[in-house]
Image (cartoon, rainbow, N blue to C red; front, side, top):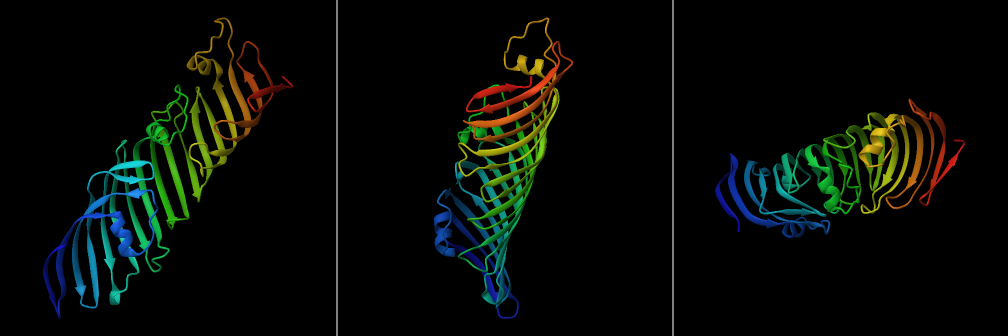
Length: 301
């Protein structure tokens, strides 16, 4: 039900306010006459002000969610935004979304601003700038059924995001940092459709450093496909063994591992090769390892 107040003056133009309670995304879909993704659901209260000249009104206001909003498998406790919609000659061409605030029920916060190009309502375009803080990555992994070993904590994710595209095709650039993680670190990801290109990844692992580049096909989030090139520098194998409960005799020091690694596969099956060296070890050495279908083959050890 629309509740409105104000006046329209032939010289001063519009001075209207309105409240639109309990607007569902299905109703929005019907109004804009375009198909929203099937995995969106929720309802909002909308407060609106209309100002401007008679032939060129300007609509601004705020929307606030009523109850949880569902986006794919994520449930949001808060989704609010300020918006502005200019209507020159009553033509709907764009909309601005500012002070967007998103709070997943799992925790964390995303703030953002966005510009919607509505010139073609059958194919609306968007630009987005966002900052994510305090997102519990382990919880999100559980929500999407990603199997992470229980000894590993992905940690808390913070990120800066720039994105553009439409409902079907998106491109995004992400700079991320992981804190409170088994492997704290940072890196960059470029997302084009369902392909994530990984650059400048740097993780602290077992008192050493792992750097990596590659790409991940996330078409199937439950079992993503990956290709990876990585370098491990000064990883303490003794610390790693202790973390995973591997019993190493007290009179043996396994030492520090340096390695160049290439791998492809998914979470269940991987193929890879590594050239490695052990230093500061009771048994220093080097060699090659090839992994295929769960079988590791040692060469030139």
